[in-house]
Length: 184
Image 1 (tube, one colour):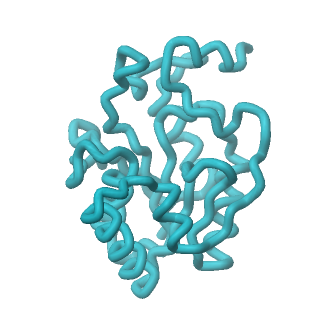
Image 2 (cartoon, one colour):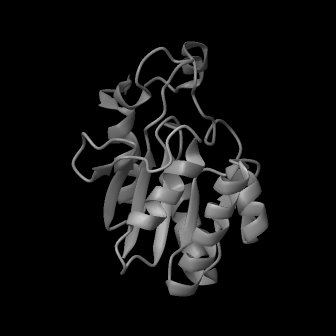
């Protein structure tokens, strides 16, 4: 099974409102990211940091950013999950083509995959041995206070795909960032 996870438990302080509920072209960012995950071939989608949503769950490691959501996602993923695809809710310009490339590369190589220069979105192999190694490395990062997802991925090795360019990997964190959204 391929499990998709939307990281959507942040405080959205710079945006001034919950980013998951922002609307672009008639859909919320949460709906956009969920649709992208299903379109790239995931079998199920969960929502990290949003226990109020169906298939949502609380972050077991609150306050440490995406690493906490990722670690909780790994620990709560069903045992039959062989690939975990993680996207942030604040990347509404992301494309299905990019996500498919992540999933395909991860499933073929069985190593973590993300795009340069950002750690998200990412795909992680979750077969037994890789799940144990990734979970152990993530717990060690949390314990040491090193909450950098990028540093964790660097330590795990894996594949960094080339930056697809444009605004595809742009996190939209403030009202000023909204200017890059395409208008139809």
